[in-house]
Length: 328
Image (cartoon, rainbow, N blue to C red; front, side, top):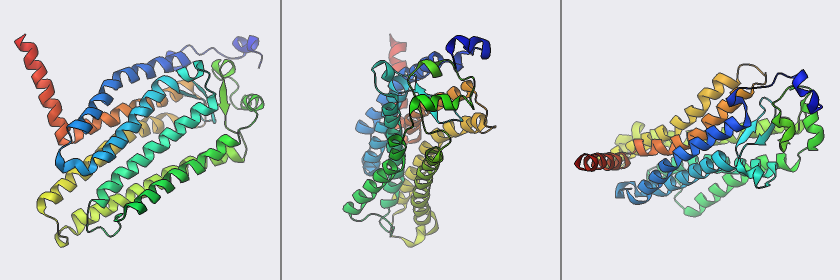
């Protein structure tokens, strides 16, 4: 399309949330607001984790690290501006200003997302392996390391071929105009990445996402089933004190809440906005991305609220601050 003809052919999109600048401003605002939450969560995990939670501390640190990394990355550096339902995007972050290739930006985003998914699996595996009677627990640490390595290798092996088989971008950008005749003007002005439209690799990209999510879900389901079986079904037949069992149940319920509340924050807008037909709507795309960026801060906030020691620290901290303010 000749850009000089764009205004006469396409209706200019004036809505704030449909623009690259709107998406960038909202995501950066979320990032700034969320940073204190990430810092406070990290502090609580590192310095306020009690002895009875020491066996879950490393898993929480791992999850906190990747949620924080994802927040900073998506809010400020590599903010995806997607042209769903088609596999094409530009970046609304500072990464483009720093001349980082768009394909490299999105590869980093996929890698961080994979690390977050693996950290969620590790959280449930940790709960499962803490039950000594669990015959499926990793009793030898080497086996656990191999299993983690296979998860990492599997995720990268699945989505890396997509980035190694990107089409010639000039032709791919023009090809998408057959199905999106009037994308936002930034589609033509910004460095973009188009993932093989209408080819085998287009189908492969969608299938790879589904495969990674399926593998993650099955592993979480398996470790959760082990916890449910030994903590509830077989609780009277294993050598575990009532106090230990109560702690195990409390931690297990806690990680379920801290995992699925942020996931719902992503799934609900995605279900509402992006499953109602194949039409292109940039405002809806950006709203879904905003919720995805926000879910990182929500994940760490829920950690503070769900686990009683951190919740107690927050109460004491804010109560003391209020008292000091009243005294002054």
